[in-house]
Image (cartoon, rainbow, N blue to C red; front, side, top):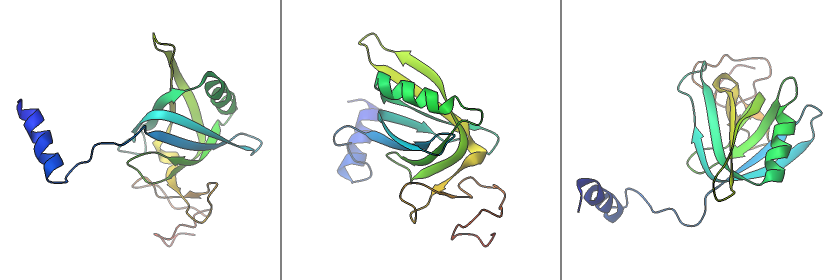
Amino acid sequence: MSIAASWVAWLLAHDKIEIPVGPTVASLVLAGPEGATHRFRLHDPHLVLADDVAGEDLLSGWSTDADADALAELAAGESGASLRRLTAPGTGALAVMGEVRVIERFRSGSGGLRLTLAWPAGLRGAASSAKPAGGVVRHGVPSAAPGEECWCERHDCG
């Protein structure tokens, strides 16, 4: 047994990690320029959050052709779509106030479609639990500036 395999076995035996059960899915609620919301699912999602506000967050996952077309159309507007709520394994619900765009569509040899979305990390916030359809609580990224529209419970900024 390799060192890596024995380390994983130890972590599993001591309840430090778990084996994922069933397929993982990211659920997205996007709003287009006119404000209408649309729900999407990305299977086997991979979310990479930037370390600073100058970077970009990335989300990729497997999608249907119809969902990929609809996402691309929503994000094609002047200011991009806003991500009202993203629920993905391993992170709290996120929201992004605009500029969400499709940056890659990759078709695998088996016909599956892998889609990658990106947005400026400086626009990321935590999705409000008070508004299930979305609503942004600012300060999801360290050093994000408070603003008039801030109504988060963690800071006294509004």
